[in-house]
Figure 1 (cartoon, rainbow, N blue to C red):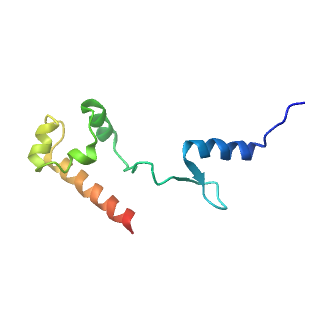
Figure 2 (figure 1 turned 60 degrees about the vertical axis):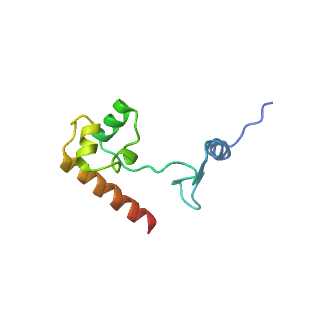
Figure 3 (figure 1 turned 45 degrees about the vertical axis):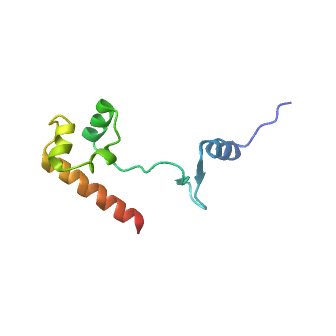
Length: 97
């Protein structure tokens, strides 16, 4: 006779190995502190990260708007970089609260 592990227990074990813990009294999952920040990115942001093998959060703040645009070969405007910077700073402020 084979021993069967209950589904809930198996789920907890798998999530535990992946570094994710279920929140108490909910089914919502909470990420462990060691996981990186997940700043919500647009498709264009993801495309640029993939194309240039960069982390956009770092590149956005390396120099002036014109330097960032030049680094990205003019694929985005200065206004877009400015909006992305503002959006990232607002996200970080909300996260601190």
